[in-house]
Amino acid sequence: MTAQLFCFGESGHSYKAALTLELSGYDWQPVYVDFFNGEVRANAYREMNEMAEAPVFREDGLTLTQSAVIQLHVAEKTGKFLDGDRNEILRWLFWDNHKLSSAIGSTRFLMNFIPEGKRPLEVIAFQQARLKSAYKLLDGHLSGRDWIAGDAATIADFTCCGYLYYPEPFGFDRAEWPHISAWLERIASLPGWKHPMI
Figure 1 (spheres, rainbow, N blue to C red):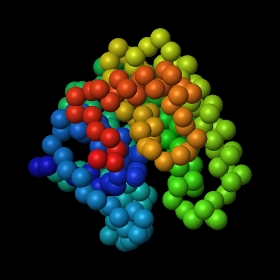
Figure 2 (figure 1 turned 135 degrees about the horizontal axis):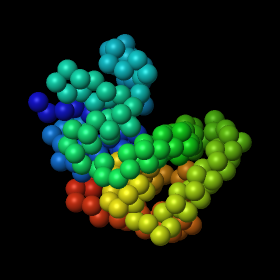
Figure 3 (figure 1 turned 60 degrees about the vertical axis):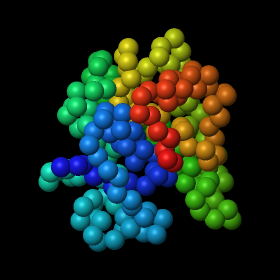
Figure 4 (figure 1 turned 90 degrees about the horizontal axis):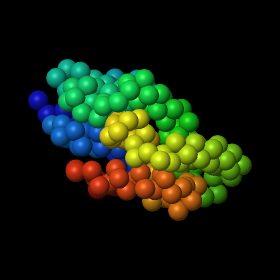
């Protein structure tokens, strides 16, 4: 049975899961979630995911939520993108979801998807300062290495890159972070890579 990923293009967390599925050669199809018109808050969606978030992965009676869980499932099932120290891979999955993607996602939303007059500028500035520390850490970690957690691409790379390909402003300029920029180019050169908005 073809797996389904309930997702939408603007979601960096959806993109991480979709990218992992795509690069793994998994048999899957996207199911569009109308997030901006409230689909995730509807009862039918909450029955599938009580957290009212995307993505949601479904296959053969299995339902998974949270992008890192979906990525781990796909990697374990296919045997791809887990080469390296498993603890190191998990460390970066957790770091990303706590320090990087969560902050980028909320900052990007506040800066681009709510009316300009309602944007909390002090909150945005605070978030961008926190993100600068995260970018600095990631850029330093990538200095002298090609991949985050081993000698080849892993799901640690696919989780951390999730939001960094999006064009909307959220306080990230690739030119300021040369090691991150080179790493993003390496990921984009992997066979099967697709931009999040394709």
